[in-house]
Image (cartoon, helix red, strand yellow):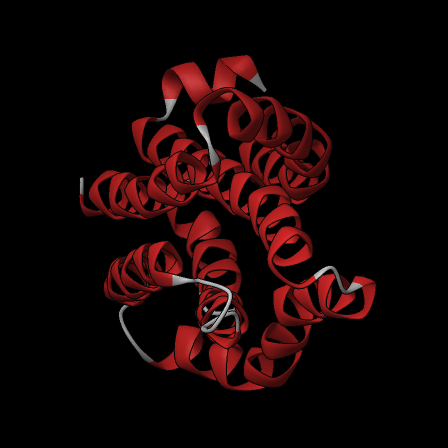
Length: 185
């Protein structure tokens, strides 16, 4: 794995973009769940944070896969990442009277995020030189989400506790912009 990342600049950039983006996602998830609970006191609404984190991707995935096959994958990831960054910034506007905005913003981030995975996975065969590197790259990218779930959620809790929820939302917005920049390279 490390050998592939060291030797292949393009794979390294896509991997770094993915890790940074996932980290921001989990920072936001932890911060958003805490914010919704503090603003509403409703466990039901906190559970809707998870729904807004997963359900929109379920609905947009069929479209996303087709678009990754049809359009420029790099452009898809860049545009989607920038859109996610704007949605993450809108979380700074969530208040007790505008808690609905948290669900809308997270749904937009999730729905757009469904476009990144098929675009990056479809690009991997074009970025490697041989079958061994392809197998390694597929295993690295396939395991990243799970690793970042554990690591990102833990770090997100520490980060939110230390710097505040708004800092976590800002980090997420910046992570999307950094990911777009890495893909542009």
